[in-house]
Image (cartoon, rainbow, N blue to C red):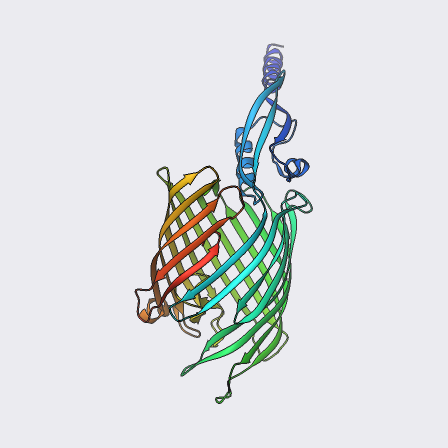
Length: 418
């Protein structure tokens, strides 16, 4: 009987302790105008009836601040009744109908540009819809839709149509040939978010690649017109935290693709790379940003190798697709410092070093250490930032190569380089 009374006493104490836990009466959304309240409640981890958990609320704040439609978010907690509390999510919205502009030039008189228009909060549900037009000697365009929360707070869909045409240098043993390259593709991806930090994308891409020799083909170089299927898998770990123009934390983005051709003369092909991002705040106005890319592909001895050395992708000032490889190591590091800030506007300066090396098609890992494959480009830049418009960062960077046969040039664009 004594033991029974002790058991009942502890049971009652446990019930009383549980009953006294602070609970959520309601999650209320404030400050939003175009962003739907029902959408914010749908994706929030905190629900009415849950235990009041500050860690879960903080994760919701980080998730909201990552969204293109939100420039900043914070929360407040107020007592409702008994042990119930109302939680208010306060949202500062971004303007989300955004033009995109990218153009660049080098000391070799190259000039190209890309103009686009994107809505990052279609239907008030964080759906991204838009497209671009590109002029890089030839005309190109693309249409995109991305709805990461289409079906639930964890499941979405993305679709893309692209018709991309460029002039591509193709490197043979004794010459560099110029090809008109066209890639027309249709892509469908499923998007799944496991939790706040981890998500995957998986799907298919059907595309046609056309390499047409430009000029008189006196050496009878190969031309291609091939239909291909691509299987894509992306895994992202994201623990970044945003405070307006400042970023801190770590992010890893892994991308694997397997390509099979309808032409039996072309072998199946795979490619994989991982981008590692690390950001940290330095003092009140400084931000150190880093991106490391490690990538490998099938090591076929082909002039059409997948990893390129390119002004707009990895090395600022280097030029437009000046080399190719079947492996890549690229490090971009820059220090960003706010020079002027007033309400919605700020000016940010940056000093950077872009460095990379490539494995030659059919080569070995020793190629990464060869001086002719190494590019190092330090430089300076400036950003003009509107804090209330998503990605409204106009950037100008000037890179100057210090390795052999280097170039120099400006790179202009919308958004941070990485």
